[in-house]
Length: 219
Image (cartoon, rainbow, N blue to C red; front, side, top):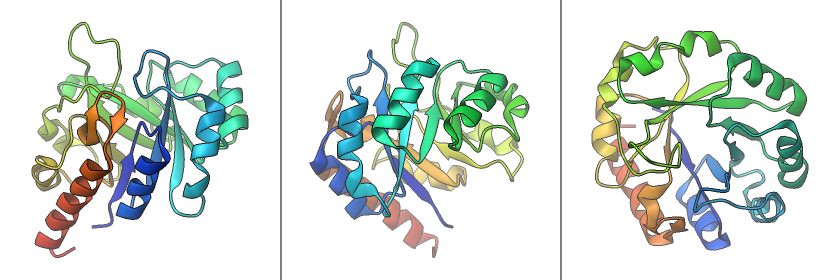
């Protein structure tokens, strides 16, 4: 099973290198002021340079307007945009056209009903990301460190390309990969020593856990 792995919310060169050394296929940079992982576009552009040719750099936004998206695309030169807000299918299509980049659309999931609107985005979004619905009162749409019931994904059409996110860590990634077979996984708070502080040791531990699970299944 070929598995894409995205380490998201990167802010330091040390964390980025740990992600790349572990075999990350995607590295994410978050542009959302309320997030402890927020980073300036120009800083992300500098930080992502070592990822060129090694992993896809993903710019994560939340209901960003055109001016901010233009700034991110110009300053960071991402390989992909991740839309983690309430963007409609029409907005996703407009962002793709304006940026010329592939787009991953995030869905916040608690139960099967939260996937009801997925079909409207098929053929528009290039990929999906399924994250846990934020706890009541949370200000962040993602990165809250909580999982959801992964079994709700079992009913999805097998041709839907998605990344699994939400509360993943070294302790539960094996179970997650046994329950569902995503094309990719995304982790942020699960490799942090404090909110927004990526820990290279935890990143390495996560990759070891993934590798152990894949080896157990002969992959």
